[in-house]
Amino acid sequence: MRGTYRSILTTIIALLALQLGSLVAPAYACGCGAMIPDKAQRIGVDREESAVRWDGRTETVVMRFNVHGNARRAAWIMPVPSRAGVTLGDPALFDELDRLTEPEQRDRFYFWPREGDWPFDSTYGDGAAAAPPGAGSGVGVVGRERLGPFDVARLTATDPEALGDWLRANGFELPERLTGALQPYVERKWEYVAVRLAPQEKDAVLYGELTPLRITFASPELVYPMRLSRLAKTPQTLGLYVLADHRMEPRSPIGGDRPEVTFAGRIERPEGAVAELAGDGPVRLTVLEQEFPHPERIDDDHHLRTVADTPYREVEYTDRLLTVAGGIPVWILTVGGGLLLAVLLFVRASRRRVGMDAGVRSAA
Image (cartoon, rainbow, N blue to C red; front, side, top):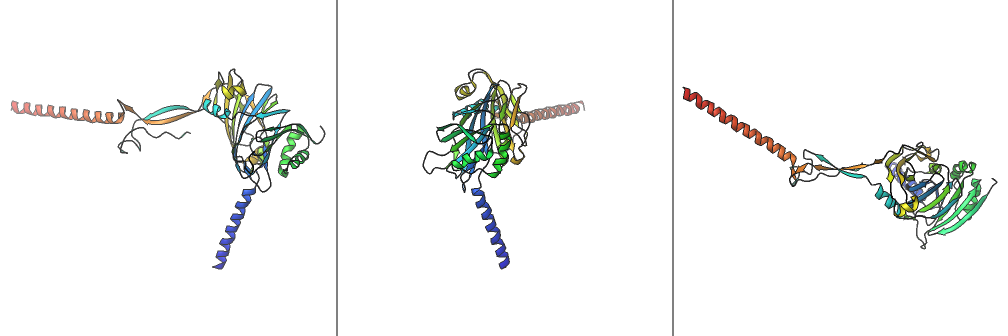
């Protein structure tokens, strides 16, 4: 019996140790960048939303993070193909994009009553709504500024170890796994946007929705850096709003599930924060959702291409019982009408039979 208790206790201790280990495990990736917290602290970004504007020459990425964990500060690194400008984004942008792309609402009627309709409930009425279906060696600091809660540095680096030196100088350690993941960008002579995230309030932690960052750089193609996300330890979700002259879609799934288009359409007159990003003229908006159940399989950045400008909008149906004349269910009228007709036919047949019987008696 003691052996059994000892075995159970050992299992419990092992599970607690595993849980505590997960609490201090750092997040090395999120969407199109790498997130690095202090040692013995944790931070997570399971979903990243970005709005991208590309006019054929210049790309602007507005990123919104929703973070969780207990980190009081963190460093975030995003590779970019050319010199980048960084400003704060408009927090209203994503709400406006959501309104522009919300699903079309339609009613879908059914004939026979369902659960919740009379006589299966005390009253009859509408059915329930259907469920809606990230040259030389060393680091060069080319710019540094304070933007709200962000300390932003724009760097050039041709050696991942040099980037590690910059991180260490700012109080962070470059994870060994991240060094190898940065190598493809070093070989292509990309630059980096390095951001030190720290709440302005004393002793506050990084939690919840952070102010969006707006990053602009020259690019002859629409590219969304995703390679660093292969370091993530948990499944990742990407939400991408693409504003361009035409509908744009990824060339490949880059190791994730097939990207799903949830909206594609022409915005004739952008307003507010959308106009600030896309301009006042007409623009095509494509919304993409993609799941990465196994982030380690990500093998490239997202390269997006022009496709046919076929519009698409999701449709959400609300199922309703078919009624007429102030809410009377059609099935009641149909069934009642059928019964009434049957009664009338029965009465008529009975009367005819009585008449025939009377005729027979008279002849007799």
